[in-house]
Image (cartoon, one colour):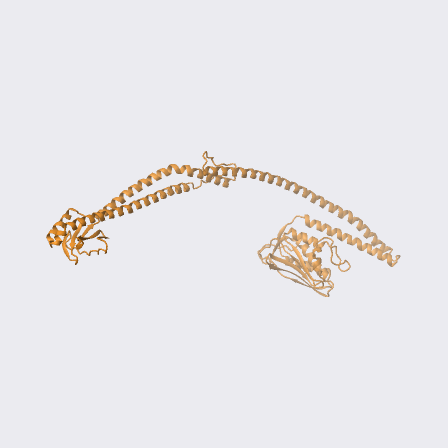
Length: 502
């Protein structure tokens, strides 16, 4: 048998992706942290630079503001032409009017932020620009304010350079992590892959002699491999012990089967011998009793004739007991031949036989159609002959009697029943019904040997079913029984197959 190779790439790929994800996440977090720090330092440096420029311009413009010389202030502002990032600058009076201005854009419309009370400058950052406003004071007097507006192009350039460098570093780092992972993942994943392959081979081949390759180190994977191999050793030993026990059990079963077959043959031979050896003397006794009653009956008194009649009846009863015991033995040892049987049709046949034997009785048979059953037709006929025969016998005290056969569905499946309205029995003594020679009525009331229901129980048990009874004294009895399997065919057997009725 060829063992399919398991999907061993799963754990290798997972380890690789795990290393790449961990390395990538660490690089991204580090890059993000450096980017935030760079942005913060750039903003702080820009603020200090603009603050220094505004402070110089303010100090150089005090004289121009004092003597109201806008031209001198503009000359001071023109020095900012040498700073390409500065977009505009200006000096405003305390009333908010522009005293002097420098701008690279003639259409500039600027709204200056207000310097909060208690501070001498304020800076705001907008889209693509930053504006710093600083108060101009001289000898405790507010002469106005100077503002400087700077572009953020350098910040954008720094950001793109940083992203480019971070991308290159990120790519190189991932390639390095991939190379390192390819080297080290085999030392971790390969033993696990081999362990999985061994486990799959053991499962598919049922060969517990296989072992996973051991590892020389003392890692958790090596301990797992060692424990797995030890487990296989224990399973192999137990499997061998189980196989040995199974072989021994099979030998014992075969030996007991042979012994049982021999015992059955001996029992059959013994039964035949007993029946033959017992019947011969009984037939002889019955024959001599018949001769005495026929030839010498008129010469005997009534008491002697009565003794001979009792002797004849006892002889016949002994013959019946022998016959019933042989039947009980046969139903326990005879091989079964299961087939489809219409029990309702079989019950009608048994009822017709009972009517022919006692044509003077008025007994109404109610036979209900039931699903086709599976069983031995000969044995199941014995069941119905006993159950319906008992119903016929125990209703003999009624001028008009009723005997029913039918079936009903219960939670456990289909249950058959035979019901009568005869003498019944005490339910407290029901456990004695199916024991040989146990009778609930005297032989004077109802003749019989007490073996019939024991025979019925053995037949039902051989069919995998169960039998029980419900009754009340003088209110009739109902005997229920089940069979192991039933067919789902219609009661008429319209599947086209032949239905045995015995």
